[in-house]
Each structure stands twice: as structure tokens, then as C-alpha cells.
Image (cartoon, rainbow, N blue to C red; front, side, top):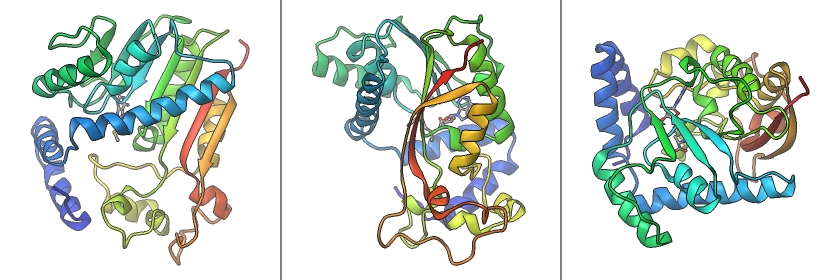
Length: 285
Ligand SMILES: C[S@@+](CC[C@H](N)C(=O)[O-])C[C@H]1O[C@@H](n2cnc3c(N)ncnc32)[C@H](O)[C@@H]1O
């Protein structure tokens, strides 16, 4: 079921008025109605992880034997399963501020995945995958130099700037200094465009922060950061960029007529950079 954006905003604004746990539960159920099939969810995530693996190989990195943190688990453990069973990671710790994994879906996913890869799965997660639901990655503590990699898919754009800085400073300490890396897929575009083709992928750039805060809610929060802001933050947190790719506006894709003054310092390429894949390595300590 695809809700139109105006209705979605009204519902999310209403949910925000409820006590937090009620709002979160109703949001979870609403999202369940909206969810894709196991097969299409699997395909979407598989194509991301395959792309990541190819890019990592091109810079002599891999997931093999690694202890990996995933930020933003989402609905199904596709990325953790692929990391463990296809890319031979040692352990995956996956964190989400929500609890979207469900027993029934996990059981179905395990059956689906067992058939696909002839692996032996029960109804729960394998021991090498540890799920931390209702846990902000920021509130977790890791011993320095004990994690080999961090991975995220379509998560950073939903995290407030101050938290992004803290998350990356924290990662700088817990990543192994010699072979540690971070790989992110970031989607800096206006997500309302995905369900409404009349809206430009950069529509939200016309608004001031105050105006945008009146439209968005905590359920569909988007920080609207442009690529140079991410790059600056990565550098400030002690990382250098090992790899970067992104897509810019294609023919026919238009920026809104009015761009808010907060964004006019950026070039068209910087404004429209989407589908950002970045690999970060910690600078020498
Ligand atoms: C758009 S979803 C993407 C989920 C999944 N990675 C995917 O690609 O389908 C973003 C997820 O990040 C989670 N999230 C946002 N901020 C987080 C944080 N600080 N720590 C852990 N998870 C977070 C949200 O709850 C949500 O499940």
C-alpha cells in the first residue's frame, strides 16, 4: 500500500503527538503494511552488497574474516546473512533504533535463504549475527580497535548531523587501525519523490530548516546534508576517502526553481549527488 505524501505527513504528525512507545509501535505496523516481498527486499539488498564487494576488491579490501558493525538493520537481515554466508565475515553486530525484525518474517526469510544457499538455518538468527534492536549505535560501547568494518545502507541521511559526528568519532576509536574501514551507501535525495513522481528528487532544498522541520517528523527525518558536508565531516572525524562514487541529475531531472540560501553555495553536481558510495579508512593514530 503506497500512501501519498500529504497523507503520510498528516499520519506521522499525529503519531508524533502520541507517547513515544505508542507512536513507534503504530509506525512499525504502518510500515509493515507498506513492506515489500521477501524476494524483492532480498534482491534490493543483494545488489547493494554485491556492489560493495566488487568495490572493496578493487581497493584490496574484503569482508572475509571480519567483525562487522551494521548501522540501521531495517526489516530483514539480508546484509548480515550475505556478509556471513557469501562473504565469509566472522561476526556481524547489527543495530537499529527501531525493532523491525519480526519472528514470522525471520522464519520465512530463513526458509528462503536456506533453499537458496543450502545453509542450515533454524527459525532464529545464526549465532554469528547479533541483533541490537531499539539501540542507538551511539549508546553502545566497544573496546578500542576491536571492529574491522562498519557498513550502512540508506541510513546516514536519517541521522541528525551532531549524531553523525559522534558516530564517526566513536568508529575511529573502535576500528582496527591497520585494516579497518567503513562503507556507506547514502541517499541524500528527497525520499518523498520515490512515491510521487511529480516531486523532484531535490524538492526539499527549496525550504529553510524551519520550514522543512514543519514538514518532516521523527519517522521520516532527513538531514538534507549535501555531499560536501559528509566529506567534511568524515575528514574532521579522522578518516580519509579510499573510494567515492555517486550519480548526479540525469537528463530531464530538474532541481526546484527556488533553492534556499542555505544551499546556494553548492554546485549543481554537489546539490544533486545521489546514490553515494563511500569507503573510509582511519588516518594513522
Ligand atoms: C531507511 S532505513 C534503512 C534500513 C536498511 N539499512 C535498508 O537498507 O533497508 C534506516 C534505518 O536506520 C535506523 N537508524 C536510524 N538512526 C539510527 C541510529 N542512530 N542507530 C541505529 N539505527 C538507526 C532506522 O531505525 C531505520 O531502520
